[in-house]
Image (tube, rainbow, N blue to C red; front, side, top):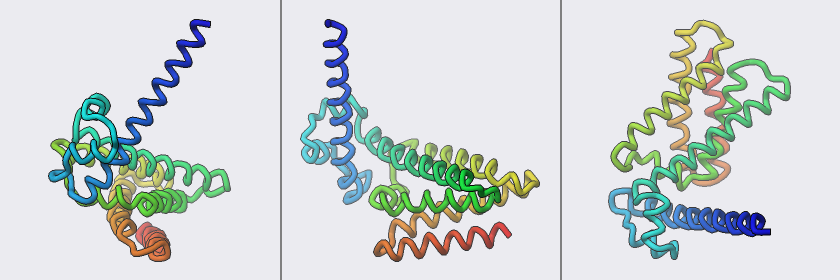
Length: 202
């Protein structure tokens, strides 16, 4: 009985912690989006969230941790949705590397639209010290993943260069999708990017 109670209390504790983290992230996003990283204030985030300053520092260590957590959340969803799209295309019988690549790219760009507030924020280039390094490291991993996906085309050096070019196109397209006026415009950009990727791949 004691174990069950402890487990239940532990579960409630983690649920409360998750809710606290979520409230802080949800409050931080509009503050960062409206003011930029440098001018965003902890006091405003705390006021919007209804969470104490102590809890903010406990969970995220400060403003930089909040900003990085928002970026990691967006990046994680982009990666996950792209991987799911590639897996679904494979399951449907697709074997052509560029077709699989485009499926993943479209999913990535769709997340840029669905979560455009975050995408606009992080394409703006601001961030805490060390954030540029995190972005470069993620870009290198992304290019590596795409190179492996495209390797079915043969030619390691050529594939690496192609992967770099196509990944750069997708990254810049994400900015345009996030800035689109409406859902129709976003879909048109995503469709056109898909066609451009195929043409570039030759």
